Image (cartoon, rainbow, N blue to C red):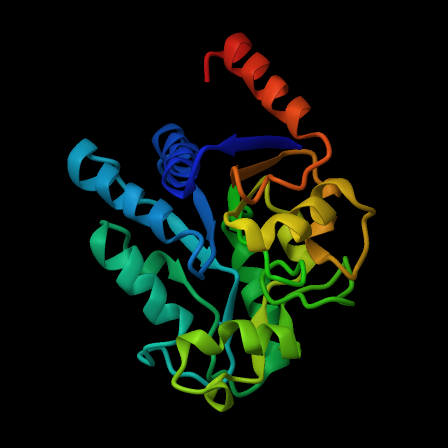
Length: 260
């Protein structure tokens, strides 16, 4: 696991965007796994800038999003489809036919989730999966207690997740109680994982995910089982890491050896 600590949110967002951009340049038809939430917003802004100012070309890229609220139509302002359109897709030249966001209106949920898994396999798998981390340590909507072998499915949202997400709705009662999400097992099949976290409020759970035991109670800890993980943090999110100084040293050595 490569842990990168940047001085602030903007710096970590630009660093994360560089990893995505490098993949897109080296493999124009790559498959990106994308995340919603406040954390990746500035990364998406930087990718948009790279597209407009540096010609970063997304025309052959295929995207898969991690999750979607169940019950929300794609044009709902709090749907993750809407979020992705507003924060990335409508600002770059990605083809709408290559964009995949789970449907919050699927009738046969089980069959739909199985089809989402098939779609990922049909394009050869996800090259890099961007992840955030919830206040209770979840990745995507894999709440505490989710199987580390879980697949795409319908989940009931934890009370903490509902409270955390209430800020995006007029009132807590409006927050959907279910979501369709990639499973932990699905996420671990991506060729590379990139976890982003910022702010003091994420420091404890970030430390648990990176340095604590692998446990279904902190589903982000499953990243320890993957052979190619990049964690990009700001100083505040990294503040409770016991091996913080080692990560800084290791990253400096990597920069010197590979030149980036």
